Length: 221
Ligand code: B16
Ligand code: MG
Image (cartoon, rainbow, N blue to C red):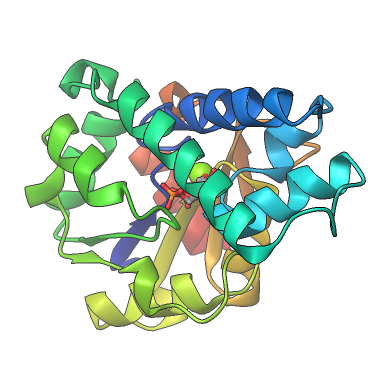
């Protein structure tokens, strides 16, 4: 099979906004007396805003403590804080190796798409100066189920007009890698090899992404 498209998660892959998400969630959790455990670092990645809040309340044993309105207000407060944090982002915040990878893929004629669960993705892509690079961006408002459900990656391949066997997808979260594999696509995990063990290839950081090598791994698969 020939590689014809690349699909990218945003937070934690193109830029380190995952740390801003985590910071904003930590501040909210602390206000309601919940201390997030270390594993929250992966558990909150890639999950929708609502699913993330549910995970946090479960950590504190507070699943049934709040009304739907109270939960909506907490999610809105987290988002307002997050939007304050991402205001300072510029093209200098694109992670190492990403621009080279996008350049190489575009030179090879590949299609590029975004599969981010974040409703703030268009804002961040604009601030990073990357918006025009992408042929397709899935609107998370149109999704029925969040990662680890495959829906978002299936949609992303569709925006490129490509089959699952023709694309390679990049993720920093175990929920995201699970979504890619459930969509029957080739998965590249960026981060801890143990946490992302379900991926076809795992690299420790974006600086380790090499287009020629990834293409080889894809063809060998
Ligand atoms: P928002 P990704 C995900 O983005 C983040 O990893 C996750 O932490 C966040 O809760 C989710 O987006 C929703 O984001 O609250 O901005 O709509 O990793 O899928 O690019
Ligand atoms: Mg992510």
